[in-house]
Length: 303
Ligand code: CIZ
Image (tube, rainbow, N blue to C red; front, side, top):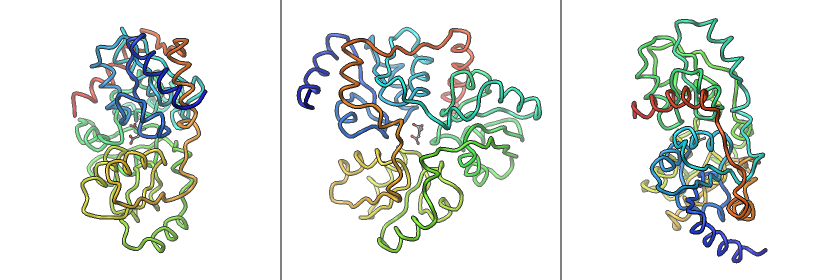
């Protein structure tokens, strides 16, 4: 099946199924191009909640599709690749978090959206990389148990000095592939370029950056900047929108290893199969969903 056939079939099936296709900023270019909305997980989950379509095809990884289901329980949420997971989200289980909570009973538990529905259900509030600082600042507690990303926790701790942040030792394996040598090489090769990185990178990478932000923040920064060259320290998928937004600007990936295998599992043919066979439906047990919804809604109310 060639791409043109798949695109035509996906567009036909989308109408037949009353479906809306959502794609994360890290998806393959051809998957982003077929989507109705491209964005970060929060923007996509909000879009999922607002859409009038009966079916949502979530091109991303499992925790993102789960968030869409948590916020839109009456809709059929499909994930085209059932193996698209997130090692960072898998780095903490509900049981591990419950043990950790007992060690710090006075701490508020803030979980990054890159976590399972079960972990969200036992957390006080969720956050994304766009709003983590705001969510922590808003906390009434002086002690925060921040899970599961230690790099995002470290970044937040630098911004909010009046709270103790206790991190969980998880990290994104894709962002962790960036080395200091990558930074030195990129900055030597492109001395005029601004370096924009995601808060999931380690501190030694972050401290060399001109800007730290979520995928959407990085995309917006480059679009609105007068700069002409940018070194990008996050997953390669963001380059597609950046190049489309600003074809006259130059973008250099900080490391050739910034490719998330899980995000790249969803191909056009998987989107087609998803709509054709209504696969793979995402379910969240109702008792978990209700509690996880509390954590997501609290975050949304802070925004
Ligand atoms: O919130 C998201 O979608 C993630 C995982 C990253 C980002 O910065 O957009």
